[in-house]
Amino acid sequence: MEPLILFPYPSQDSDFLQLHYANQCGYPEGATTGLYLHPWAVHDHIGLAGEMEILRDPTDDGFRVVLKVYSWAVAPFSDGGINCFDRWKCDAQWWQSGETLSSFFDAEALALFSWKRWRETGRAGSSGLTLLDNLDNCFNPMV
Image 1 (cartoon, helix red, strand yellow):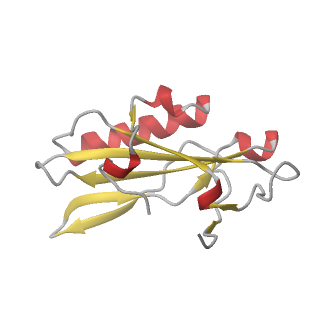
Image 2 (tube, one colour; image 1 turned 60 degrees about the vertical axis):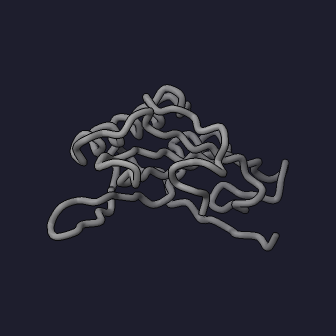
Image 3 (cartoon, helix red, strand yellow; image 1 turned 90 degrees about the horizontal axis):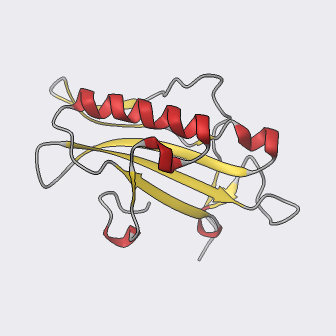
């Protein structure tokens, strides 16, 4: 496979999550963030980044929250660096809300909580989301 190099944004100073909203007729239909380094990445020289999405579930009228977490080996242990990595050479985990949320605003609140917990602990498992084991059948397929 041809390398797909990703360049995460520097870590934010606060837990603020900048969501980019998708609207239809003035109603929110979803939201995404950019890919951001974890606050510990530069300090501890580890490859760790994440991004968040709120998506409408195609099977009902609810919303799902998805946290995508990437980790990779940083030079001199690999050819990756803190500020960029090859998407095909990293470990990726998708964490998703266990149930659909009936309100976009509830999904937004869960996304903000999950993002804050992931930043505080470095563990997506503490974010209130469920790990997707089979990424081929996940709600939001890999890009």
